[in-house]
Structures are given as C-alpha cells and as structure tokens.
Image (cartoon, rainbow, N blue to C red; front, side, top):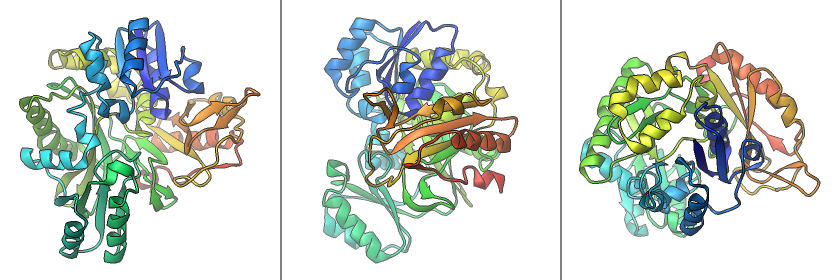
Length: 429
C-alpha cells in the first residue's frame, strides 16, 4: 500500500512512524510533513487545507489510503473533496467535523441526543453573554466556538475575569473563531481522553489517555495544546468506560448517522469523570496531540487494517480481528514529555538550534516525535513552533515509561526549551 498523511505535527509524525511499520505498507507520503517525517518517506510542501493542491497531489501519488491528521483540513472539507475523487479517507466529513470546529454545534447535538455534558449558553451578543454570566456561580468556563489551536478555553475564577475574557473573545482574540462563544457550567472532576476509531457503525476503543493542558508543573498557568500525556489512565475504570460507551459514544454515532452525517475516522471524547459519572468536556474530530504519540508508541501491532476499515466500512464484522492485529490487549504503558519553546503558549522565538535528538532516539524504548521543527541552512535541526518535540517512551509499567521519557529529554541539548517535570503525576501519586 501507499499511504498519504496530511499534517506536520507530533501527532502526524507518530502516525507516520506507526503506519510505516506495517508489513502492508510500501510507502508513506506526508504533506507538508516535518524533518522527522522526512526520514520516513517523501514530504510535499503544501498547505493541507488547500483543496486544489491536496487533490492534485493525491491524483499524482494515487494512494491506497489518505489519513488526515489535524482538524483544519477536516473543517475545510478536504475529506469530502478527496472522497468525491474516489479516494479512501480516514477522517470525518466537513459536516461531521463540526463536532470540533463549532463548540456550539457539538453542545446542541449532545443536548439533542441526551448525552451528558455541562449546562451551557451560546452567544454572539456581548450584552446577552454578560447577563448570562451574572446568573452563574464561579468558576466560569468560556470557550471560543471555533478552532483556536487548543487555546480557546479559559476557566475564570472571578466574575470580573470572566467578563473581561468574554469581552476579549468577542472583540476578536481568536478572530472569527471567537465571534461566537460558549459559556459553560464548571464541572468538578478529573479529565481523560477516550479515543474511538469508527466507520460510523462499529467502534474500537483505544486505551484511555490523559494529557496535561496547563503549561506549568502542578497544573498551573495558562492552557496549552498539551504539555505531555500518558496511557493507560487509571482514572477511567471499566465501569466508567462502559458508561462512556453507552451514554456518550453510541448515542452520538447513531444520532449522527440518523442525521445524515455518519462519522468516519477517530472520535476524540474529552470527558470529565465527575461524582455523578462521565460527562463530555469536548469532542475532537482527530487524534489528540500529544495523546496520539503515547497511543502509537504503546500499540505493539498493526494499525493500518483498522484505519482502512474505518475509511471503507465493515468494522462491526471485523472488530475482533482488527483489535487482535493492533495488539490492543498487549498495550504497553507509555508517556510523552513535550519540549516547548520558551514563552509558549505565548509568543515564541523561532530558529534556536536543537542538538542530541539522535542520542535520545538511541535510548531503549524512546522515540522523539517532531512537533514544530525545521532545518536551517547549515542542516541543523531548529525550533519552528511552540510545541517542538514529543519525547515518548514505553515501559513494563507507567513509572518505567515516564523515567525513560525523562531520560530521553535529558539527552537533548536545547537551552531555549522547557518542559513539565511532573507528567503522569496523577497516576503515579
């Protein structure tokens, strides 16, 4: 098989790395890719949201499967355009991807299908939003309706902070993405990430992961796209996962199919484990980043047959065989430590040189996934984004996986970077 992977981050590098291990696969092409993905197969410099460019590349390569990594191409309708050309695509339609591209759309669907989530209001009028806040109690959860690179959520501790956030959002802090906002009730509990691979009917549940959104140790500081992750996460026990399946995933998949937007791809279910059971924090239309890295590293088997069946149908009848091929029952505990550029999630300086990645990669059970890297004119690896590397490791248990990941971090020489030192602290406490 030839597989085309769209995207350029740590999630996409880990997918390319895993896909390339399949005995079914001869070539992995990436667009635009990154220096890490370039070692796996050819990379093509194009914007993955550019429908015309992506279609032209697909017609040139003629891949057997196209895997869409990030959310922006899904929101732009790339999967629809490629399917119309006759390609098999792992990734939901533009209509179904609104679960991520519009927080309000997702909340309205949950309400329609009876899926447990926080109470909420949708607003495009500032006065109405501020009046709604006055009827709530602290803390307040304010979300940009559209895509904001994982940074469009603020948990305000006071009414004044909430009002200021609402005003900033609606004044264009995230451009059109925050022209409409969602205000939610705060949910007490612990968050976890449930990933479901689906063809719209059947469902494969991957090991539950937990990421670290806050920038600083002890879950302090502003929200980020994710500073690290680990799996499996013990916060979700078998009973909780059963409730996620029956109360959340099954109603969503059947409801969306009935509403003429069947969901194909991976459904990311961000849940809050509350005293009254699991409730949805958010849906994403793709693998989480950095959760994807721990999932790909920990799975010992072949993920390609499952990707293909999700794209083409027939998951219900082949479910057991696909789970066995993936090695789901033999998943190895895994952890990812994100190395980010100083200043993240605010403004960062690009171009600093990173050394020692090969040394980290050479450590037993450690793999370094590139998230925001580039090469300079001297051929040196440089930082080209906020989150730059995802140092990932597996182990016989979670403690060993975490220790190996930090051993990998220590082998990397990058003074302009930083990382959290407490990844998986909830599971290891």
